[in-house]
Image 1 (spheres, rainbow, N blue to C red):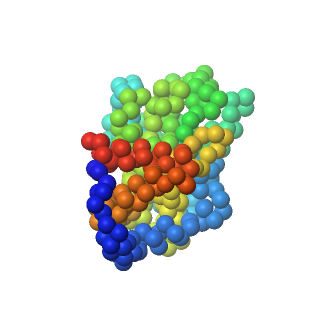
Image 2 (cartoon, one colour; image 1 turned 90 degrees about the vertical axis):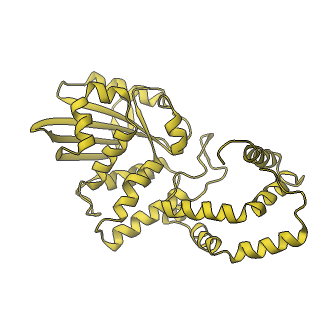
Image 3 (spheres, rainbow, N blue to C red; image 1 turned 120 degrees about the horizontal axis):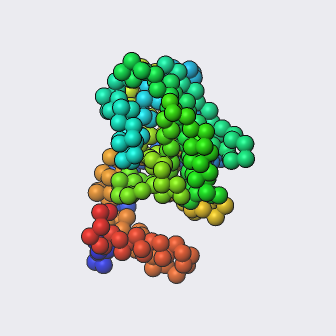
Length: 307
């Protein structure tokens, strides 16, 4: 897509007025200019905060009163993005996930699980399940990575540790959670972490298959507010935010309503948006990195790639 060089000043003024009066713009402005509680506290991109929240959500005995709903939805997500090893080596478990022909007799969820001389695992889950009348113990080893890269070969360390302690009646499922987009996740042939035995999932799948369905359950207003606040924290853009030199994803995940609004907003205002980006990319007063990034975005929009 090319920027229209015949875009006149009067047309720009008219489009700016339409832009400001667009109902989608007003909804988006209200959403994106309202800070989530986690942003106010300055913890919206801290891994420990996300791990703590997810552990709270997965714990069936917590105050959200969702019971086993979240942990079952997590198992659905793992099923959706599972590797061949889970399908072939643990076919009974895999098939029970598909049909939901199982019961959870006991669940233990621990955030920031300390393993001596190994590390601090982000989320650790022990499940005692009943499958076709037989007890099956399952452990979920979840490494949560809000940063873009793994540190200190953590996934191999966890894999080696738990496999050393492996017993016959326990199935180990290793999960690597990141903010990668679903389109990029689907295209992966293996997990991005060092240990390729992990099943990679993303925050968008947590939103699509867990949080938004949970909002449709019969829950209290307090739980609904907590989930909505968390969803907002995931969808807030974080520009030039780095931890220990690692770049963060611009947006961790989007709710369905925000995605529809933004898509509609783009379709109605793309000429003005593109002209704004072009102005920034050619403005000598802007930082070179900013100009180059915007130019790259414009070049991608001009190609045959899916914008």
